[in-house]
Image (cartoon, rainbow, N blue to C red; front, top):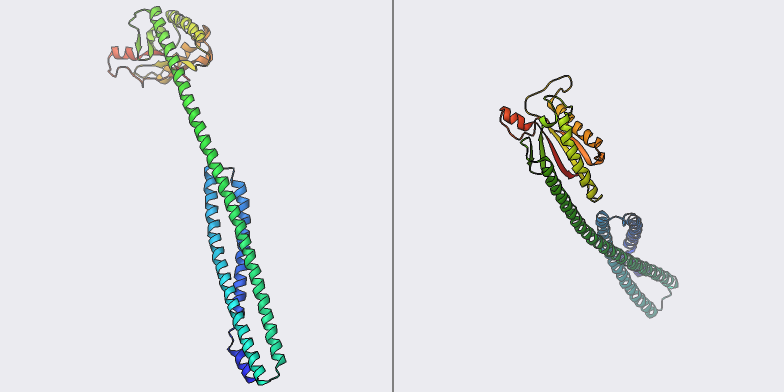
Length: 338
């Protein structure tokens, strides 16, 4: 009897560690399932995005991979705990056999002790069976997570393939658009050259009308008196010629070419402060508007013409002589794009 009590005191107590291991494993499983459900919800919300969705999916996959590694570590710990329990059970069975042999040799009568040990062994077997069931359940959950990860990777691959296809289509459309724009620019340049040619034939060679780059330049004196924005009769005559050429040219141009006639008003650097025009800005803009309104009255479409005033800030000649001032007072006509 004293020998049996001494033996029970010497037996190590594995139950607290086993319970802690099971608690830790169950908490990990619940945490993993919660993270997995949340990840599925947010993934279903964000898969419709492109670059940002792909980044979030990659980040979630990385988190799931970390969780999977953690769960694998927990699984290994559970396996180790199970092996330790099985080893303990084997030792208990061996100890039971040894005690039974001792009791049989001594012809002792210890039925109560044997029943207690048998009960303890049965409980350990039940705990081992439950632990094995838990390990099997964790393995099944890990397999399900792997399948989910594979599905996510497949969805990512499909999204990347679709994105590449979209980029290819965008590149093709961009190339086609550039070709179409180049064709329109060439057509507009051809009609601009035609306009310049016709205008030269009509206006002839006059010192107060000249070509500067891609613009026809008229001295302001052709259209206006000094400091005024009312068209002179001889200026209207010149504008009639211009309107006739632009009207014919507008009928010849395809309607899809976005051309426009820009009328720019310029003054010299000498300031003006009259009740009607408080600055050179006001005078240059009013002159450009007068020319535009007259051309519209002669049949030029209002959506094909624009008025701009530059004041004294775009001079052709920076000198301060009367000749330089005369050259800088001008009205420019330019065919361009909207």
